[in-house]
Every structure is written in C-alpha cells, then in structure tokens.
Amino acid sequence: MSLRERLAGARQLIHRAFNQEDLDLTEGGIGKPLFVLAIPIVITNLFQTAYNLADTFWVGRYSTDALAAISFAFPMVFLLISMAMGLSVAGSVMIAQNIGAGNERDAEYAASQTVSFSIIASIILGVAGYFSVEWLITIYGASPDVLPLAVNYMEVISLGLVFMFGFIMFISLMRGAGDTVTPMVVMFVSVVINIILDPFLIFGFVDNPFFAIIGMPGLQDQLFQMTGYTGDGLRGAAIATIFSRALAFIIGLGIMFRGNQGVTIRLRNMVPDMDFARRILQIGIPASIEGVGRALSVNLLLIVVGLFATPVVSAYGIGTRVLSVVFMPAIAMARGVETMSGQNIGADKPDRAAATTAFAAKASFLILSAVGVVAFVFAEPIVSIFVGADQENAGRVVEVGAQFMRFVAPTFGFMGIMRAYNGSFRGASKTAVAAVISVGTLMVFRLPVAWLGSQTFGLGSDGLWLSFAASNVFGATLAYFWYQRGTWRNVDPERARGAAPSDD
Image (cartoon, rainbow, N blue to C red; front, side, top):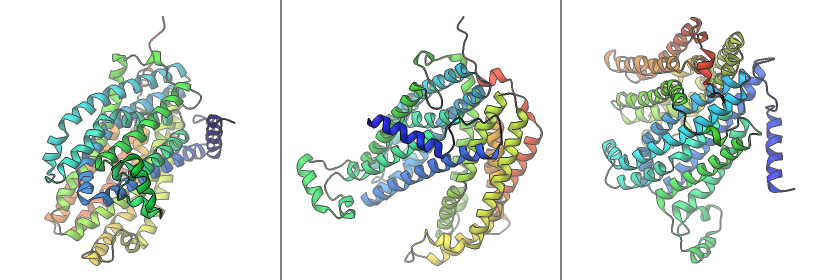
C-alpha cells in the first residue's frame, strides 16, 4: 500500500470517527450534526493555540527582545487575518447556501472565485504590508533594539501572506460544505511541521536548546559541522510559520481540486468575475469590520486598564487569556450554526435554520454556564497557574485575577447565546447585523461601562470586570431580540448564493 493510500485511509477513518461521512445538515435531528461539526472546530482551534504557544516558547528562549518584537507584530498580523476572515465568511456562507439548495455547480463557482479573490487580496495586502511595516511598528513605539527584529518578522509574514490567507480560506470553504474534519487534519500537519522547524530555523545548530531538551547536545555539533547553519533568529520563526502554512495551503488546494472531499474548485472558474466580487465584498466587508472591531475594542480597553497598577494589568492579561480558551466551544458552535443555517436557508427551510439557532443558543448557554460555575469556584487556582510564585506582587495578581473571574464567570453562558445568534445571522448573509451586534456590544457598551465604572463611579478595577459581565448580558439580549424580529428571513436566495454565470 502506497503512502498516499495510507493517508487517504487514515483520513477516512478519522471522518468515520466524527461521523461526517454523508452528513446531511438539512434533514433529521439537529443536535448530533451540530456537535459533529463543532467538535473538530474546537480541536482545530486547540491546534492553533498549540502553534502559538510553541512559537512563544522558542522565541522567548531566543531573547526577550524577540519576544517583545512578536508582541509588536501581533496587532498587524491580527488586522490582516481579520480582513481575510471577511472573505472567508463570504465564501463559506455562499457555499453552504448553494449546497443546501442542491446547486453543486454554483457552490464550485463560489469556492473557485473566493480562492481567486483571496489570492489577489493577499498579494495586494502583502505588498502594502511589506513596505509599511517599519513605519507602523515605529508608530507602535518599538524600541531601537526591538524595531529591526519586528520588521524582519513582519516582512517575511507579509511576503507569505498569500499562504496564510489561502489556508484560512481552505478551512472556511470546507466548513461551508459541512466538512470540518479535513481542515482539522491539515491544521494538525501544519502545526507539527511548524513546531519541528521553529527551533532549527531560529537557533540553527549552535547553542540550540532543543538538543539539550532531548539530551543529545553532541548532535548539534555534528549537524553544524555538516551544514554550518547558525539560524535566522526571529526571521526564522516567520519562515517556519510561512512554510508550514504554505504546505497546508498546497495540501488544501490539492484536496479541493481533486474534489472528493468537501467542496470542489475548478481552474476554469477561477477567472476573476467582478460581479461576483461585489457580492463577496457585500458579505465579507461587514464580517471583516466585526473582526477588526473586536481587535480594536481589546486595544482600546487596554487604555483604561493601563490607568491601574501593574497587578491589575497582569490580572487583565491572565483573565482575557482564560476567556479566549473558555469561549472556544461557543466559537465552534457559532461556526456550526453558520454552516447549518446557511445550508437550510439555501434549502428553503428557514424553520429548521431557526430551530438550529435555538438549540445552539440553549446548548452554548448550558455548557458555558457549567464552565462558569467551575471558574467561579476555582477562580484562584485557575489564575495561579499563570502566576509564578516568585513574581513581584504575585499574591495581589492572583487576588485581582480571581475577582475578575468571579465577576465574569456567571455570565459565560450569555456570551454563548450571542455567538450562536451571530452565527445564524452570518449563515443568512446578514453579516452587517452580526457586525453591529458585536461592535455595539464591545465598543459602544463595554468600553463606556468600563470607563464610567472604574473612573467616574469609583469602583476601581471592579468597574472593569463589571463591564465584561454587563456587556455579555447586553450582547445576548440584543442578539436575541434582533433575531426575534425575523429580518434574517428576508434573504433573496439567488442573490445571497451568488449564482455562477450561465453557460449559454
């Protein structure tokens, strides 16, 4: 049996384990297919977290300046990825609606066009990013020691942006077709390759801590004598990221061109169609605004947090990291709702789309509320995991961080509700509504409450934590009542799906 046959067999085995073979999202029960879609998304996100942790681990061992450079580079990367997310949501929604309507040809056309425009957009943004990174990072306030490291990193990322965009697009298009297992497997391959390459491309074969960790320090001398490679520092970390993403994108293209799993793309359908581009932008731009708005809200809230002493700032950083892990199930459930709603709307089954949303909102509320109980009861031990015993003011950081958790934990379930309804709005092509709810909750509501509570009403840091809890409830309430208005049902099916041009 060839390696290709073995890999194909392993992929089929994984698909059967998650019951995604012949999965029909428009018929039968709701709970099982929704969870079958969501669980691989959670695992995929965990793989992404592992990649981030590995990068931070090796870069931190290289130098503190390199670690600081990554911190300055991250806002730019996040902004670029947010732009990609808009295009990916548009492609995913159109594919889901076309598959639900039984329009396989239109689904193929939507996928092919989305890939083309993502490549074009990534090249334009990559070139613009390459020539502006030094200026932007200087504005961020990077020190003279950190600036060249951050620039080196972002120049490589900018040149390889097409691969990062492409891989994100592959994940989204496959999800729109109801396949979340294949992207999970490809993500795993990408993360493993990145973790393997990181220490060698950063350190080379001289003073590489990897060999000390595995107990073979003599091996690096032999390898250095053979190659003379001394590593490329932070630029090497960027190269590892781009290489692993490039390989994943190529694998993804191969899967989509072959067309025996998920969605199919065809070369003849990839010639840019400007009429189709306008439809992609109509759906994608609001989705990008939602992502950018989330990023800006976090950065703007840091201004308020920065008015407090270091223990509060540290507690905020720990708390937000914990929340990012806690909300993974809600994000996965929302992506599942997006796909199921899209396919059922395409199949002209709005009542089933509504039932899917209601189920997801209830399930997310119950699951995250249970997590909230655990976080409330064990707040101090959870925060302590992220605080070194010898850290200055460690006790105060744990105390404040635990207070943060106790304020927010009882409202975890409400964030799940908002995510579920926003997923349904996106599935119905109502990405502008989802953007208004998210940005309104995080920037129009949370930020003023944080400022007023902590500064005007004298609640101190408790005012910050109160803003999180109150905005979670506000966002869920806003999303629920907006959904009940039924405006998501007002969808022009053919316009929403983006039909392929006639062959006539």
